[in-house]
Length: 380
Image 1 (cartoon, rainbow, N blue to C red):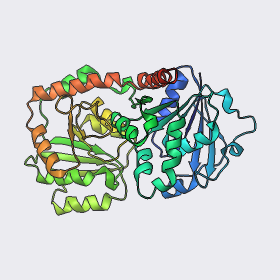
Image 2: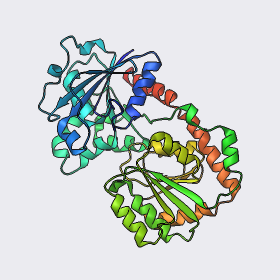
Image 3: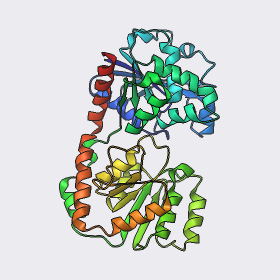
Image 4: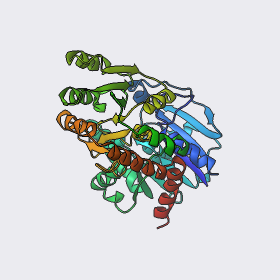
């Protein structure tokens, strides 16, 4: 099958964009599909997000041809003129778009060519630009047209299915869930889980991994730890961002500097190494599309506290294989006390249960399921 993937969220030369969409593309390529990418990069968006601008040319990523195009706005441009003369949209078996910019670019290419199946993916960004007071004036109508034109719609988590169905009647009956996964080899063996859960650790090592921006709610974790009765812990904060000074101010205000370690921005390998030494992972962010960091923490036998109603709904089941919590420091404080008092056998059962869940979210398997579900809907 020849797949054309269109998105602005595809990294070039290890750039800072998340790797999740790239993971889908690489797994499709490894499964024998012919995959090409149009990286529809809108300059104003890149400047606002402080992303590096790359020259307009063809790049290659492990055998995947990538057309990088730069446009000032997502509306007034001719995407066809940005591509080589021999580019033929009809050569593809399916077009898949991710992110609002990808959807708008795909619509300009696919247009009224009904013979080409088109799959449009819904992320948190899509829902925001449809509903936000400022963005919806520009994006709502064209994005909803993309959903109407799409033969199938992939929602990046289970909660988005209901949300997009409310916003667009065209989404009903053609939307499926397309979560991310992690490589099977990343999941630690059973022996490691047995050894790590054999006894309680003191102090309790708590971790969070996030870009330090407001919606990640790392301040709520610090507030909750200040309110909790349990105080035999060390909190490791992995990440950097504009909230760093505010968070350090909170730590100083609560006089817990000796209990909180700011690791800064570290490599993924270093994150995984530190998660091996961690017991509890907490992230109660808002507007999360999926949250691979939850799965990575779980792969290292961490108990996981995730956002209630967030990107891992249906994966983290509250009280069974982890916990979910609203972004509220009082609620989180009570939950931290609960986790700290859990019998060791209950901790063991919980992390092993989540390990079994992880195995079903092998990244190769979820990538193939993505295409299987899409064509099940496309073919009626």
